[in-house]
Length: 162
Image (cartoon, one colour):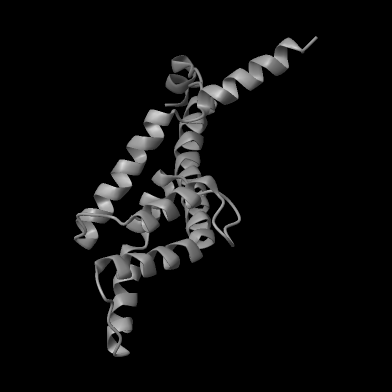
């Protein structure tokens, strides 16, 4: 008979998985962003299929699946770098046949930079934690600081000294 704790953990893990509706919405958001940034109104089946393979983690040479949301964030995160790469590409005398060609090129760059993206996210989490810790420590130190009691002064002894 299955252990109740194991079933509870399994159910909690399932609850955390995104629903099909949420996955489709994140895919739509990604395509909307790419459509705006690259001026593409229609994505070919090859590109959409490639995005699906990336999401499922079955694309050749891809170590881990990358969600649509994460891919969307990566395109935003590397936007400046991608624009710099375009300038270098054009300076070398090459041209893309169309916006879809550039998008395919940028997708390869973004996928290759996935480890760098994960490292940057981890560093940001560490910085956020470090920013929170001093604030928490200062609050604790104020609360835990010993209260100095005023010593009672005998007025009569002071008058005697005069």
